[in-house]
Image (cartoon, rainbow, N blue to C red; front, side):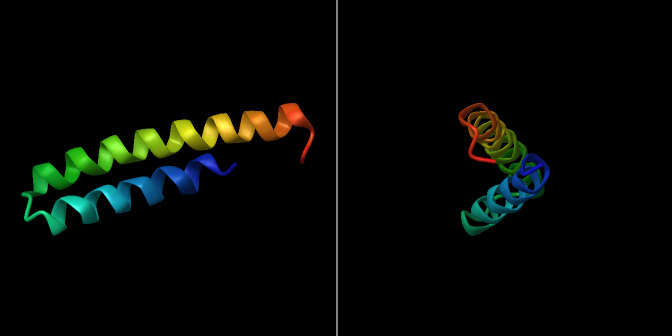
Length: 56
């Protein structure tokens, strides 16, 4: 269940990156959404790999 925290962490990191670049609220929303999706997919594959390899 690491995917849900990864999703929110990605959204937070994306919003902070956009804010650091002086982006508008829509920029922060777009960066947050993109990062959240990427973090979610990476966490999903990591979770599948851990289960498949029997490490958990």
